[in-house]
Length: 119
Length: 112
Image (cartoon, rainbow over all chains, first blue to last red; front, side, top):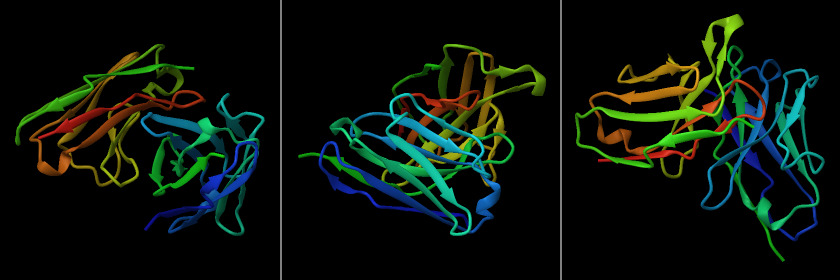
């Protein structure tokens, strides 16, 4: 079955960097676009970024553009989110999600990893 | 960005009743070349990630019971849950998949 497992979260100081990973299994990773979504404490879901199956198309939310970088390694079935210049308002649970091939919806989600930005 | 507004914020229902959740987008989600409305519904239970229920406004995702149905077009959409079960207690939210950045509604909490 489809599995997405995020890792790399933790406590980090403002201004520092962190890289999240999302290990995929149970499907052909190289055929799907992949997304990152986050949910800050007490807030709703916020879509962050998408990368196409072949890395040729990438979009970001304005809130993270220029600070976060989405990437993938199809040989390792792994999605990444490099987060630089972290701010306290980046504190959130971060989820990776698979894009469905026909409608670009997020058809499977990981359990999430918590990132806390605090001094 | 397309703003998504859901109503109500919460619903308290009885088992077997029909629950109706509304979602409105600030701009049309109808994509004429495909004749589809790009609106999805998700269910989220405590401690679990979101689960896709409906996409393209009315297409049920794989394995979703037919008690769940989506309708609507343009800017106004509805998720209907027939014959409410105890297992349906969750947060439900809509999301437009018409254009990036994808945006979500704030969610509707369904309780029994």
